[in-house]
Image (cartoon, rainbow, N blue to C red; front, side):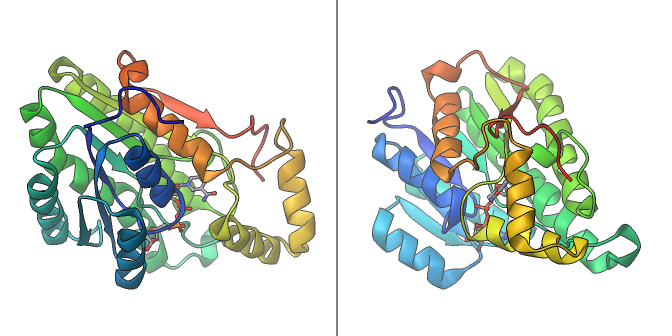
Length: 259
Ligand code: NAD
């Protein structure tokens, strides 16, 4: 069922060729929004565009300032303006004891997960102001609200996303721009399978044990779906979210602890 009040919204989704971003794009399109997607994976972006038929796409790495500037020029042309930015691009980063983490891996994780969001917001804000207000949805994580050993670059980056969100909600609120963060728990899919495999290896336990432990630490005893995350993004972007800003919203089945 289409979410009310989404039709006609002009939406940019970063990293929209796969995973959560793809589901978010699909849900917005189903609701009658106009969507422009970016991704750094050219074949995946092409395949997703062929299936979803968004208004436009841009091949871009969100860490590259020139590519991000091009993304927003192209989005403005394909959408005719901007009402919603979904800052979805993010990587898991390394899983290792802190003394074994390479500086390059630390930097790349912070670069994609934090600087990438900053670069997109910097381009989006003038367009959102020109539209008379709008909505920014930043993908954080359950790991942006609590500690998570062996994943320090990821955790540091997602706590930064929550701080960025709260600060921008204050800075941009007077212009009618709402800024919120989504904090998903483990999302069923390929990426969480990779995360579980890496964590199991780092802790010297089996993948089945790691998955079972992770499930036990969630009150509802199940992972969430990309669709759950997309539903929350639509809720925030539509009229239902009109008075919601500065929040870090958990969609995680109530994670009790991350270990
Ligand atoms: P994913 O690993 O499935 O990747 C989705 C897309 O991101 C891919 O198409 C990839 O090419 C693209 N991408 C990666 N780096 C990029 C970059 N620098 N520029 C542009 N595109 C890039 O990701 P996902 O699991 O869908 O995660 C989406 C967001 O949700 C991330 O910010 C992630 O941290 C967050 N998140 C995910 C989970 C989970 O369990 N999957 C949990 C909590 C938070």
